[in-house]
Every structure is written in C-alpha cells, then in structure tokens.
Amino acid sequence: KLYSIYALGHILQGSPEADEKYLKILFKYLMGKECNFDNPQTYSEKLQWLKIYDRNPLYTQLVDKYEVRKFIEERIGSEHLIPCLGVWDHFDEIDFNKLPNQFVLKCTHDSGGLIICKDKSTLDLKQARKKIEHCLKRNYFLNHREWPYKDVKPRIIAEEYTVDESGYELKDYKIFCFNGEPKAMFIATDRGTDTKFDFFDTEFHHLPFTNGHPNADKEIKKPENFDEMLRIAGILSKGMPEVRVDLYNVNGKILFGEMTFFHWSGLMPFEPEEWDYKFGSWIELPEVR
Image 1 (tube, one colour):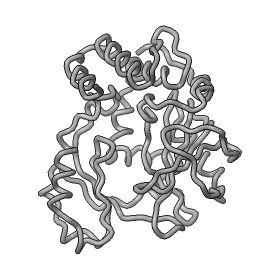
Image 2: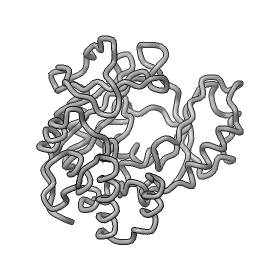
Image 3: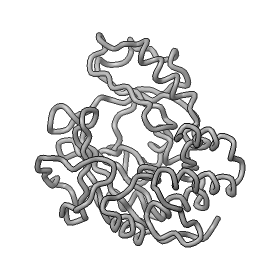
Image 4: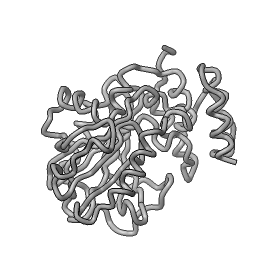
C-alpha cells in the first residue's frame, strides 16, 4: 500500500495544497493518526507543517552535500570538513585511478546514495555504478515532500574514508537544534549491521525513549569535547526553527557530517509518544513565507 501512496504522491504535486493533502494521507498511513496542520503540536506534525510553509531558499544549499561545504567554511572553518576528493555529474566521469585506496562516494541530493570503499582492489564497479546511477535519477523530494531537496542538482562527491577511535566505524553525533539552541541529540552506532540510536540531553543524560531503532546494549561514553560539539551545532543552526546538525568526532577533531531538516521525515513514531510532544514544544513555527 505504501508504494501506492507514493504513486499517488507523484500525481498530487504542483502546489502547497496538493503537498498538504498528500502528506495527510502519508502521515495517517505511517503514524496511524491524523496530522493537524491547523494547530500542530507534536514534533512529527510540525515537521510536516515546515515542509509546506518554511521554504527558505538557503535550505537547498544546506542539504546539498557539496554546496553546504561553502556554508561550513564561512561559519566554522574548513578544518571541520572531511577532505573532498572530487565532484562529478556522471559516474563514468570518475577516474578511479586518481582516487586513493579508501574513499567514500555520495550522491549530493539524496539520502542513501552511498558507496564505502575500504579497498579499491575489491570494489565492485558494476554494482557501484548501478547503485549510484539509480540514485542520481531519484527525486528525493517526491516521496516525503522534503522541500529543500527539490532543486538540488544530482551529482557525485568523493570524500576521504574516515573512522573514529573505534578503528572500524564512524559514529554519528546528531544534534537537534531549535533557533540555534541545541536541546537533544542521539548517537548512531553499529551502522550497517544492527543500527542503534541512543538519545541524550545536553548534559549527556540518557533519555528514556526510542525512535526508529533500539538503544545500544553497551555504554556510550560522553566525548571529551562534547560542549564544543554543542557550540558548533548552535552556530550552524542559528536562524532556523529546527534542524539536526550531524557531526563526527575523530580523535578529538570535530568534523561536519550533514544538516537534516526532517529527522525520519517526521514519519517515525516516538515510543513513548510523550517525547513527540516534548520535541514539538521546542519548535516555534515561523510566519508563513
């Protein structure tokens, strides 16, 4: 049924009214309840509202994995960027002989268009091309109406392969910010195997809820420069009603990951639901643009 709803979404487009009608249908199916656009209260509802009514042109740059680098340089400095190895419009433009043995390929315009190469000699180029070319054709805006992605130019970017102190993974520190004020965060671990999400407040107290993935069954230690991560997230999110700033912490060096305006696209239940209202209370909706 979900694919039928997505197909309907390809028909219901072209105006904010059509987008709202489609999101109400999608929200009811995935969340099991109506979405109140007239008086949104929960985090999930307010994200749907922001998709329709907060269309700041800056957001298009910020979700573009290549163009956002300019914004990061201006606000916090290029030392917080993972080195870029190249950017291309088409897969066949990539000269793999010039890339190092380890690297990461990403599509600039979506989520999921990712190839992690740990050893170039074993990279399946045929499968890599198939995945990347499929993602390049995808309009990430259509299924969930995340407006910032609508006009991002589909390209491919290569970055240096990076791991943290674990030696095998790169933990995500994802910080929820509201008008430049960090309020909560989660750490994603065991990515690619059995992903875990653990939520914390800004004092690094573990929060008692889940959202999309279970909690880890191991202790997660507070980074030594945690306060600096919060400070950087606050700088990057200033002037935005809600955005999730994703950072990495590599041996004490804070690196930028991405900016996400719609965590789970606002379509993943909080358990217990009271946390959906808690997060929602932190969003002050702007005037309609």
